[in-house]
Amino acid sequence: MEEIVFLDTCIIIDLLKGKPKIKEVIETEIKLRNCVINDIVIMELLQGARNKSDLRFIQSQLNKFQALEINQMIMNLSKDIICEFTLSHNAKIQDAIIASFCIIYDVKLFTYNLKDFEYIHGIKFYWS
Image (cartoon, rainbow, N blue to C red; front, side, top):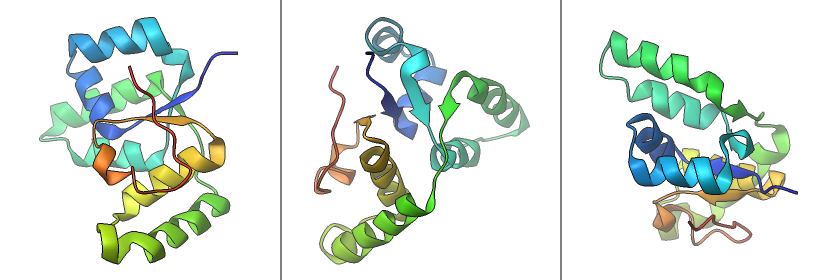
């Protein structure tokens, strides 16, 4: 069975920019059909648009990714992560939701921003 991998926003940005290393990893190791995202990543990508052209491009590319739902279990775990780590690690809401999503769906997280997640128990990372 092929491994499902959650792509963090930073990975998708590099993929949309055509960065060869990320493109190669996605095409040869993970396969695009095995990549998932959620509404947090979608909103972060849309928020990063600099103009209408960027926004249209991002919107046109989003259909390449399977977006899974954020459910109440994910939100409850996210609240627990924020309560446990907001003071000690400055946990961010979007990172707590992404981490909870990966834990609940039991998928690996592909990110450059390990420091934003490595203190969260139960999260697994994809290493290329």
